Length: 233
Picture 1 (spheres, one colour):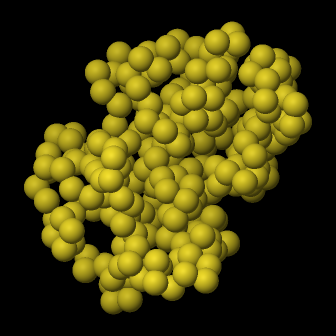
Picture 2: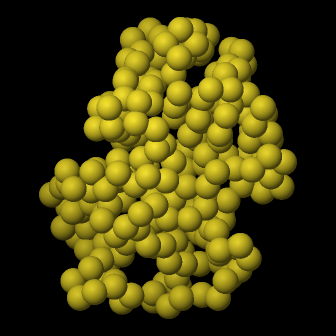
């Protein structure tokens, strides 16, 4: 997937604005660089005057070691998949100074409840690699009865559409499409796949594109998005 510097810059600035406004935040970097979300952990603190706490390979594979690292270095922001958060909780994670980002897999109501009294803020983040790490976010409130993927980050648009790119009414299931500054150029050396996945955007300016996520979604009454899984599952 060919991601531009501009797309990454947009992600960093929009996350800084919407989720992590502190200028001297301390981020735990424990994700392998082969996983796109590592780009947020590594680059956001360095572009906003913060600190990066780099976990060693051994620490990254040991939830108890990561808990100690967070406490010892007064980490303020931790990003992990829901599976990763379950391991951290099992290892005794409990740090009310931390803003927790959870993404890459569905966040269950039970996991949200388990995390709520262990962290300062809990944010569900959603986004395919093709739209540069994260595209939507939702700060999960206490006692949430359901977990949505929220609203778009800055310079990002979301559309729930039919196969022929018609909008569906709110509450009706369709395929989630994304546009905006975070879209990748496409797939390296795969023009056919690029053309079929990044399609002309009928809702944007001439030449703009939509990314077909392959995820089913619907717009909830409060205007946030609910992700309902993959089309092919």
